Image (cartoon, rainbow, N blue to C red; front, side, top):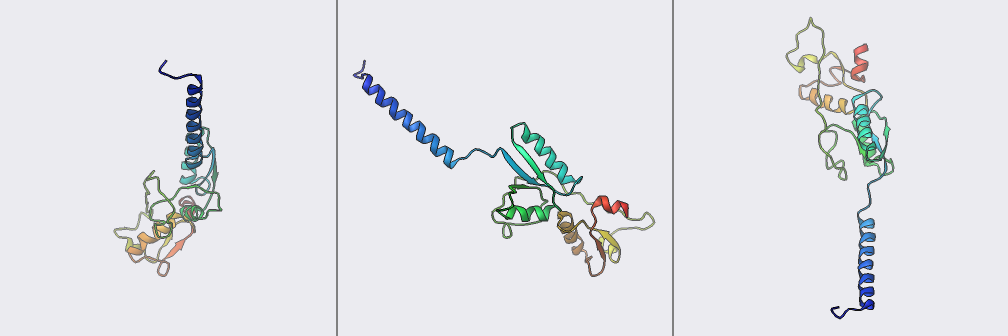
Length: 179
């Protein structure tokens, strides 16, 4: 039998088991398993980001991952929590333009999951052809800490509309409907 006896087979099997064991330990140490529990920073209650977080919770539950949703003021707070290693937040929902690689060098984006839609509601008796016509008006730009507010202020600033010449209200879309 090719010059092998039981002792050679035993040593060969021992070497193979050692290699497999060391490989398994190395992989377990250097490539840990994904967490079975995580927290996602979403947004305010009954808002779009909370709905997105709930959908991800359903999807990840199928893979036996327990997802907790942390309600926040929105994208700005979510990025702040993601930048804080002690916050316990590993995933957050935020629209583009809230941060960049200089302000958040350790954050990675998984990509776009939806588009940000901007609606402008105004009185039917008035004509609105240009954002500059909003100067001097009352505009709901979103609550402090929300990405809606940051991006809306950037868009309005391009047209010269700002808090110095216009009343910018800290209202969400839903709250603005009531006023």
